Image (cartoon, rainbow, N blue to C red):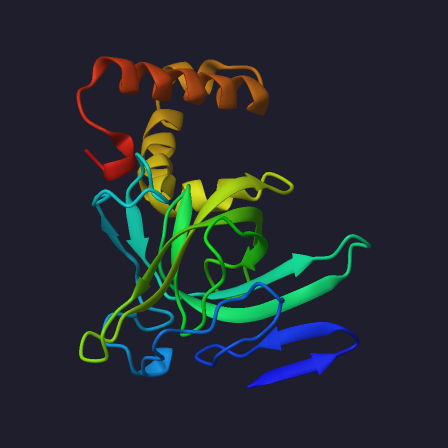
Length: 213
């Protein structure tokens, strides 16, 4: 279903889309995203996985996370000429894969807004479509991948916390109990010291903190 309102084409997740003019029709349509066996349930604790070679994730791990994405394209006047609401299959600091039964041309640049948990401030980014999957009906996977190009208002920090938050919290809480941290004169000095200690740990310990090693 496509709704035309004041020049804006709005797509519902799991439906075919005709706008904008260069939007490709699906070939063929697969079942609605709600029937896919591969999309995690919303609200579930995300499972962190190694990158399996997908270009949108580059060197970062991915989180199996179902969260709502608002996508749109802007016209020359700054208005929206296309918009859609989709659900993610996985997300990383550098990209995401969205379940969809409609497709946009490869290389299309879109605006994206999504939250990693209910009530959280949204992450806002500009992204490029870099890959698509038109899976057969029995596999229940269809959609396209986004590579984040840049973020607004340092909202990418929320993505980093998805992967590093628990480890950083444990490290910081432990370090702030140390005699050195307690001897520092103010909060700023303690923050700087914790950051220096974390960087030293990364430089002297084998493994990848993004993967919890």
